[in-house]
Image 1 (tube, rainbow, N blue to C red):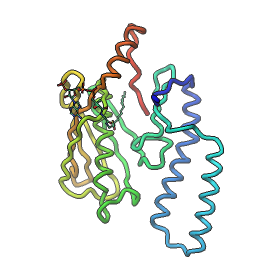
Image 2: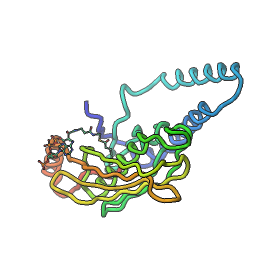
Image 3: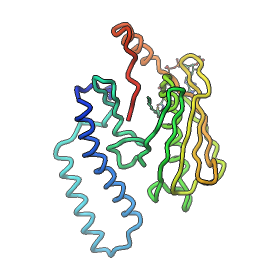
Length: 226
Ligand SMILES: CCCCCCCCCCCCCCCC(=O)SCCNC(=O)CCNC(=O)[C@H](O)C(C)(C)COP(=O)(O)OP(=O)(O)OC[C@H]1O[C@@H](n2cnc3c(N)ncnc32)[C@H](O)[C@@H]1OP(=O)(O)O
């Protein structure tokens, strides 16, 4: 089942939901950090667990059937709120607030805490890959050449310390349905991880875009995601 959903939702309603769910997800991120770092006694842990389970049950009283998907409104605003890197409603996402420009550049400044650790004090290599996959994909999309990750290659130049980080990406070149993007993660001392990737507009999407272009001759497809 496609999880690209068209919803009749106003921009005001989207802002209301963002103000509601964004802080909820942030509270759960704080919780994850606290679970890793707490040193309270056993009874406190047991009480906390019971409280958390009760809250989970409350939230599950009414829920969607599967994942959040990507939802568009009539204005073409896209919401990838379940996304593992940028999702407003996803506590697993750091989350990154990604900035773009239409030349095919994307950049973000973000903080990775204890929940993203691999080697002691350092970011897990898979988390760096996760972030760079998204950033390179965002650059491709920002340049009007979105695609699914075909191949992603990483070079870990040195350990990435947990803390304040920056990621950047841009389109290197475009060959038909294939967009090649490059990027990196850096700390205050410089680049820690480099990435290159090819993002491919899948056949099914080519067909969907052609159909859309035929139906709405002048209107470009929606490409703005938050
Ligand atoms: C204003 C602001 C705007 C912002 C805007 C934001 C936009 C929003 C950002 C979202 C950012 C998300 C960033 C995360 C993105 C994921 O995480 S995607 C998830 C991970 N990737 C996947 O699951 C992909 C799984 N694979 C597939 O679906 C399919 O194999 C693919 C990759 C779509 C290709 O399938 P296909 O369409 O049938 O392509 P096919 O005809 O076989 O091949 C086309 C060409 O690609 C080449 N190719 C095929 N597969 C590969 C491969 N794996 N590697 C390299 N080349 C390949 C072929 O050789 C062929 O080349 P040519 O012969 O044309 O030279």
